[in-house]
Image (cartoon, rainbow, N blue to C red):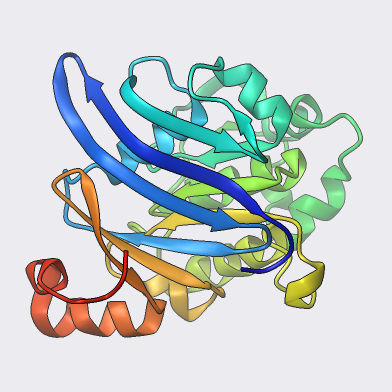
Length: 248
């Protein structure tokens, strides 16, 4: 484990939505400076896990504990988690009418260097447009990266940033994720961590990850090397992962 103790600890987490059990005893630890990938078929609970960690109210914790930097945040409101340093990029973020991208950056962080953030993501032409209004799939994903780079979270969660995105945008997004997770620093110097959901693994060609997990039917069934697990998925599918002997 890089750095100090775990940044995130999820223990025996059971979560339901509208009375339906979705997560069933999830256990995962993300160490300081680590970036983990989360694989799994549609509907298995990946988005539910990230949304629960973020504190979105409709996700009800029935049992278990979420600790962030050693502090129990299981029932902490979403805005308090954001203040602690938890950031999330949604798979399908909303359009925010009346709010320009440049103003959104300042709302996220008044000290943020908006011009640099926009330039790094080749997003200058969108600075005075309403957030996500009329954006293509790749532009929406870059818009999410703009917000996270402004926020500068200690723990970043990304829900399928490579979904519906062309190759050029995937490269830009991968570069932004590497920046958010300090991959330009030596492992021992990194303090920022993250979890990324990816369905096909395309983004992993453009960003660095330390560990991967496979979720099936609301629980993590396999953990290990991102490249090895992705290859296993390609060869044997997700059910093959369920039968593997990788330590969870």
